[in-house]
Amino acid sequence: FDYGPLIASHRASGAALTIAYQRIEQRWVHLFGMVDFDADNRLTQFVEKPEQPTSDLVFAAFCVFDAEVLHRHLEQLEGT
Image (cartoon, rainbow, N blue to C red; front, side, top):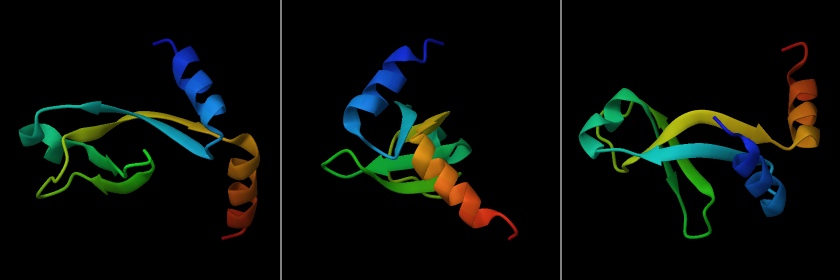
């Protein structure tokens, strides 16, 4: 898998997080993590193995984080 385009898209967007997703037949979505986005392409929903899927988009298990944001959140979790 070539991560280059995903990383380039992430950097160009200025987002804190970019996820990869794919469209599948909705009858199979209940087996995966379902995702949905708003009109501005922002992640609005992530449901692991939904009983009644409302989207045909599933998380493809690839994420790109802004390093500064990720480090800040990990530091907040230390000791919890």
